[in-house]
Length: 306
Image 1 (tube, rainbow, N blue to C red):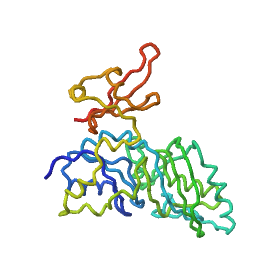
Image 2: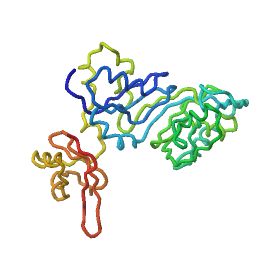
Image 3: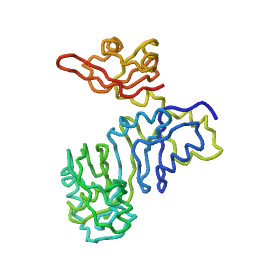
Image 4: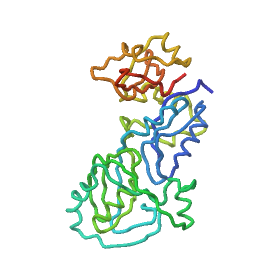
C-alpha cells in the first residue's frame, strides 16, 4: 500500500450501481483511512459522484451544499409509486401531441424557491427508519415538504411520450419529485426513466473516471493521480495564505485572530463567510469569518487538516 490519500475523487457512476458499492470498491484499491461521498445517487441514476478520501471527508458540508446540474428523461402519461421506472404503475393517461407547446410555460412555474415533498421511496428518515423501507411494507406515512431552489429548468427535446430536461438546482432537490410534479402540472402525470448528474459546483462529469475502474488488481497509483488535492477541492472559496510558523500553530490547536490572517488575504472584496487557510498550496484549515458590531472582523476555525 502507498501513502494515505487525502482529497476528493470525481467518479462517473454507472446505472444499477449504488453509491456504497463505489465506496467499497475504492477501499479495496486505494490506501485510504476514510471514504465517503458528497451526495448519493439513486441506482437508476448515473453521473458525477464526488468521493471524499481521507481528510477529504472533512469537506463534506461545503461540497454537498453546492448547486447540482442534472439531465433527465420523464415518461409522460404514467405515474408510479416510486416516481421512476422501477415502481408500480398507479395511473395512466393519454399524452396529446399539443402537450409540447405547454412545456416551457410549465417549466417556468417551478423556477425559484419551491416546496416539494420527498419521494416515499427515499432515504429520508421517518421516526428513525428509512422511508423506502416503510414504503415497501405498505406503511402509511407522510413526508413533510421542504424548500428547494430551482435556478433553471428547460426542455432539451421531446419525443412523446418522452421528454428530456436539464435542471440546475440547490442541494437537497429530489429530481424525481420535481419531474413528477411537472407531469401533474401538465395534466398527464409522469415518472422518471433516466437521470444523469452532469455537474456539482465547479466539477463536471467530463472530468470523472468511470466507476468500473475500481477493480481488484488495478494499479492504485493511476487512481491516486486522479485524486484532487484538498486545497483544490474548494475552488470557489476565498483563500488566505499563512506562513509556516502560523500554519504549525493552527495544526496544534491555536485559534488565530483575524489580524493574524488578513495579511494573507489578497482578494479585493470584503471577506465574509468561509475562507480556506493555506500554506504553499497546502490546505491547513477552513475558518468562518464574520463581523461583530463591537469587535470588528472575527475568525473561527471550523475544520483543521493535519
